[in-house]
Length: 204
View 1 (cartoon, one colour):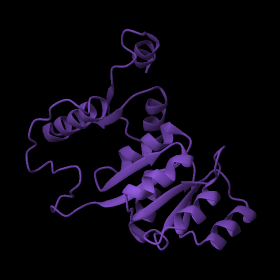
View 2 (cartoon, helix red, strand yellow):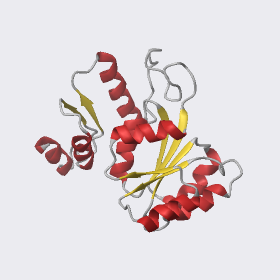
View 3 (cartoon, one colour):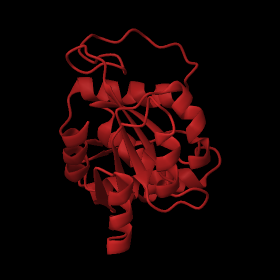
View 4 (cartoon, rainbow, N blue to C red):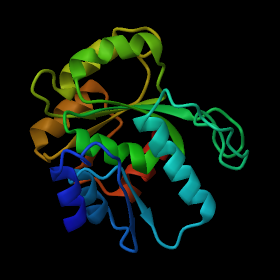
Protein backbone atom coordinates (compact mmCIF):
# COMPACT_ATOMS: atom_id res chain seq x y z
CA UNK A 1 0.00 0.00 0.00
CA UNK A 2 2.94 2.31 0.65
CA UNK A 3 4.21 1.71 -2.90
CA UNK A 4 0.76 2.44 -4.32
CA UNK A 5 0.57 5.69 -2.35
CA UNK A 6 3.96 6.79 -3.70
CA UNK A 7 3.07 5.90 -7.29
CA UNK A 8 -0.20 7.85 -7.17
CA UNK A 9 1.54 10.84 -5.57
CA UNK A 10 4.16 11.01 -8.35
CA UNK A 11 2.98 12.74 -11.54
CA UNK A 12 5.24 10.49 -13.63
CA UNK A 13 3.32 7.38 -12.59
CA UNK A 14 -0.05 8.56 -11.26
CA UNK A 15 -1.97 7.77 -14.46
CA UNK A 16 -0.56 4.26 -14.86
CA UNK A 17 -3.12 1.64 -13.79
CA UNK A 18 -2.19 -0.67 -10.91
CA UNK A 19 -3.45 -4.19 -10.28
CA UNK A 20 -2.97 -5.33 -6.69
CA UNK A 21 -1.70 -8.92 -6.36
CA UNK A 22 -2.48 -10.14 -2.85
CA UNK A 23 -3.41 -13.07 -0.65
CA UNK A 24 -5.89 -10.84 1.21
CA UNK A 25 -9.16 -10.80 -0.70
CA UNK A 26 -11.70 -9.54 1.83
CA UNK A 27 -14.04 -6.72 0.79
CA UNK A 28 -12.54 -4.18 3.21
CA UNK A 29 -9.03 -4.66 1.77
CA UNK A 30 -10.35 -4.43 -1.78
CA UNK A 31 -12.16 -1.19 -0.89
CA UNK A 32 -8.99 0.30 0.70
CA UNK A 33 -6.92 -0.51 -2.39
CA UNK A 34 -9.54 1.06 -4.69
CA UNK A 35 -9.67 4.19 -2.54
CA UNK A 36 -5.92 4.55 -2.97
CA UNK A 37 -6.33 4.38 -6.75
CA UNK A 38 -5.75 0.73 -7.63
CA UNK A 39 -7.60 -0.50 -10.73
CA UNK A 40 -8.34 -3.94 -9.35
CA UNK A 41 -7.31 -6.74 -7.00
CA UNK A 42 -6.06 -10.14 -8.12
CA UNK A 43 -6.24 -12.61 -5.26
CA UNK A 44 -3.73 -15.42 -4.91
CA UNK A 45 -3.75 -18.19 -5.97
CA UNK A 46 -4.86 -17.28 -9.49
CA UNK A 47 -4.69 -19.00 -12.86
CA UNK A 48 -2.88 -17.75 -15.95
CA UNK A 49 -6.28 -17.20 -17.59
CA UNK A 50 -7.42 -15.00 -14.69
CA UNK A 51 -4.24 -12.95 -14.88
CA UNK A 52 -4.45 -12.46 -18.65
CA UNK A 53 -8.14 -11.60 -18.49
CA UNK A 54 -7.63 -9.04 -15.70
CA UNK A 55 -4.74 -7.35 -17.50
CA UNK A 56 -6.64 -7.24 -20.80
CA UNK A 57 -9.70 -5.73 -19.10
CA UNK A 58 -7.49 -3.12 -17.45
CA UNK A 59 -5.82 -2.15 -20.71
CA UNK A 60 -9.18 -2.01 -22.49
CA UNK A 61 -10.62 0.31 -19.82
CA UNK A 62 -7.62 2.64 -19.75
CA UNK A 63 -6.79 2.57 -23.46
CA UNK A 64 -10.12 1.91 -25.23
CA UNK A 65 -8.78 2.82 -28.69
CA UNK A 66 -5.91 0.37 -28.44
CA UNK A 67 -6.25 -2.53 -30.91
CA UNK A 68 -7.47 -5.59 -29.02
CA UNK A 69 -5.99 -9.03 -29.72
CA UNK A 70 -8.55 -11.79 -30.26
CA UNK A 71 -9.50 -13.42 -26.96
CA UNK A 72 -9.63 -17.18 -26.39
CA UNK A 73 -13.19 -18.46 -26.33
CA UNK A 74 -12.81 -19.50 -22.69
CA UNK A 75 -12.61 -15.86 -21.66
CA UNK A 76 -15.79 -14.87 -23.48
CA UNK A 77 -16.73 -11.52 -24.93
CA UNK A 78 -17.58 -8.81 -22.43
CA UNK A 79 -21.25 -9.00 -23.41
CA UNK A 80 -21.54 -12.77 -22.95
CA UNK A 81 -21.55 -15.11 -19.98
CA UNK A 82 -19.84 -18.49 -19.84
CA UNK A 83 -22.61 -20.14 -21.85
CA UNK A 84 -22.43 -17.64 -24.71
CA UNK A 85 -25.71 -16.02 -23.65
CA UNK A 86 -25.97 -12.24 -23.44
CA UNK A 87 -25.27 -10.97 -19.95
CA UNK A 88 -27.98 -9.27 -17.93
CA UNK A 89 -27.48 -5.52 -17.66
CA UNK A 90 -27.15 -3.58 -14.39
CA UNK A 91 -27.04 0.21 -14.05
CA UNK A 92 -25.46 1.44 -10.80
CA UNK A 93 -25.85 5.12 -9.84
CA UNK A 94 -23.84 6.53 -6.92
CA UNK A 95 -21.91 9.77 -6.39
CA UNK A 96 -18.95 7.84 -4.91
CA UNK A 97 -16.69 6.70 -7.81
CA UNK A 98 -14.72 4.31 -5.60
CA UNK A 99 -17.92 2.50 -4.60
CA UNK A 100 -18.99 2.27 -8.24
CA UNK A 101 -15.62 0.77 -9.17
CA UNK A 102 -16.00 -1.82 -6.43
CA UNK A 103 -19.51 -2.70 -7.62
CA UNK A 104 -18.21 -2.97 -11.18
CA UNK A 105 -15.33 -5.25 -10.18
CA UNK A 106 -17.56 -7.47 -8.05
CA UNK A 107 -20.21 -7.94 -10.75
CA UNK A 108 -18.51 -7.66 -14.13
CA UNK A 109 -17.84 -11.38 -14.53
CA UNK A 110 -21.56 -12.18 -14.33
CA UNK A 111 -23.25 -9.02 -15.60
CA UNK A 112 -22.82 -6.15 -18.03
CA UNK A 113 -22.39 -3.24 -15.59
CA UNK A 114 -22.92 0.45 -16.39
CA UNK A 115 -21.84 2.85 -13.64
CA UNK A 116 -22.88 6.49 -13.34
CA UNK A 117 -21.54 8.96 -10.75
CA UNK A 118 -23.55 11.91 -12.12
CA UNK A 119 -27.25 11.10 -11.70
CA UNK A 120 -28.29 14.10 -13.79
CA UNK A 121 -26.95 12.19 -16.82
CA UNK A 122 -29.22 9.19 -16.28
CA UNK A 123 -31.75 10.20 -18.93
CA UNK A 124 -29.10 10.08 -21.64
CA UNK A 125 -28.10 6.59 -20.56
CA UNK A 126 -31.70 5.39 -20.46
CA UNK A 127 -32.08 6.32 -24.12
CA UNK A 128 -29.40 3.83 -25.14
CA UNK A 129 -29.46 1.07 -22.50
CA UNK A 130 -32.27 -1.20 -21.28
CA UNK A 131 -31.09 -2.56 -17.92
CA UNK A 132 -32.47 -5.59 -16.12
CA UNK A 133 -31.91 -3.97 -12.71
CA UNK A 134 -30.96 -0.60 -11.19
CA UNK A 135 -28.76 -0.01 -8.13
CA UNK A 136 -29.53 3.48 -6.79
CA UNK A 137 -27.83 5.41 -4.00
CA UNK A 138 -30.25 6.99 -1.50
CA UNK A 139 -28.43 10.28 -1.00
CA UNK A 140 -26.69 12.22 -3.77
CA UNK A 141 -26.13 15.99 -3.93
CA UNK A 142 -27.94 16.83 -7.19
CA UNK A 143 -30.58 14.11 -7.40
CA UNK A 144 -31.29 11.46 -4.79
CA UNK A 145 -32.10 7.87 -5.63
CA UNK A 146 -35.69 8.72 -4.67
CA UNK A 147 -35.70 11.46 -7.31
CA UNK A 148 -34.47 9.05 -9.98
CA UNK A 149 -37.27 6.50 -9.58
CA UNK A 150 -40.04 8.65 -11.18
CA UNK A 151 -37.65 9.56 -13.99
CA UNK A 152 -36.90 5.90 -14.68
CA UNK A 153 -40.56 4.92 -14.52
CA UNK A 154 -41.57 7.69 -16.92
CA UNK A 155 -40.02 5.57 -19.68
CA UNK A 156 -42.37 2.85 -20.88
CA UNK A 157 -39.49 0.43 -21.46
CA UNK A 158 -38.08 0.96 -17.93
CA UNK A 159 -41.20 1.34 -15.80
CA UNK A 160 -41.23 -2.30 -14.61
CA UNK A 161 -37.47 -2.70 -14.20
CA UNK A 162 -36.62 -3.69 -10.60
CA UNK A 163 -34.41 -1.42 -8.50
CA UNK A 164 -32.46 -1.81 -5.25
CA UNK A 165 -31.35 1.09 -3.07
CA UNK A 166 -27.81 1.45 -1.70
CA UNK A 167 -27.72 3.33 1.59
CA UNK A 168 -25.88 4.25 4.76
CA UNK A 169 -29.21 4.71 6.52
CA UNK A 170 -31.55 2.28 8.18
CA UNK A 171 -34.14 4.78 9.39
CA UNK A 172 -37.77 3.69 9.23
CA UNK A 173 -38.66 6.83 7.29
CA UNK A 174 -36.21 6.08 4.48
CA UNK A 175 -37.14 2.42 4.31
CA UNK A 176 -40.84 3.28 4.16
CA UNK A 177 -40.19 5.74 1.34
CA UNK A 178 -38.19 3.12 -0.55
CA UNK A 179 -41.05 0.65 -0.17
CA UNK A 180 -43.61 3.25 -1.28
CA UNK A 181 -41.62 3.88 -4.45
CA UNK A 182 -41.59 0.16 -5.23
CA UNK A 183 -37.99 -0.77 -4.35
CA UNK A 184 -37.40 -4.51 -4.37
CA UNK A 185 -34.81 -4.28 -1.59
CA UNK A 186 -32.01 -2.22 -0.09
CA UNK A 187 -28.34 -2.88 0.65
CA UNK A 188 -26.62 -1.25 3.63
CA UNK A 189 -23.14 0.23 3.07
CA UNK A 190 -20.36 -0.77 3.35
CA UNK A 191 -21.43 -3.28 0.74
CA UNK A 192 -20.62 -6.95 1.26
CA UNK A 193 -19.93 -8.88 -1.92
CA UNK A 194 -22.04 -11.89 -0.92
CA UNK A 195 -25.05 -9.71 -0.02
CA UNK A 196 -24.76 -7.71 -3.25
CA UNK A 197 -24.63 -10.81 -5.44
CA UNK A 198 -27.38 -12.60 -3.53
CA UNK A 199 -29.88 -9.74 -3.72
CA UNK A 200 -29.18 -9.03 -7.39
CA UNK A 201 -29.60 -12.68 -8.39
CA UNK A 202 -32.91 -12.74 -6.49
CA UNK A 203 -34.50 -9.96 -8.52
CA UNK A 204 -32.79 -9.94 -11.91
